[in-house]
Image 1 (cartoon, rainbow, N blue to C red):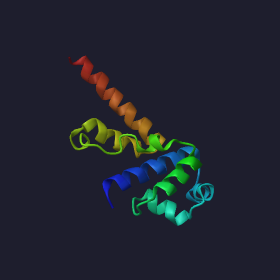
Image 2 (spheres, rainbow, N blue to C red):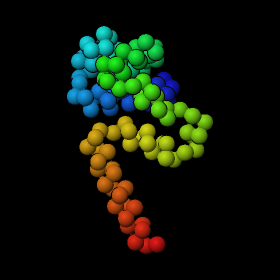
Image 3 (spheres, rainbow, N blue to C red):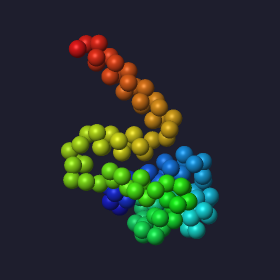
Length: 113
């Protein structure tokens, strides 16, 4: 599938796990099949706007938040946006660990200036 499908799927997985929902629970809340939720999260299925709306309502997030910076002409050349997508796809624990590493690198770099 396309990069955008994988990006949206990863974001949905992130928000679902933040809420503490299983795929089954999210599917129940959204009125969709659990297998479909899994396929979306893995980027295997294209989803309709209607299904996307049901999922974001079940997660309690605005559709615009999910789609923010999902694609754009500047994306290919922007390391910041690429890093954002990589970071966003990680679990909260891994995000914290990576942030601490980046922070240490940043502080170390400032000492040598």
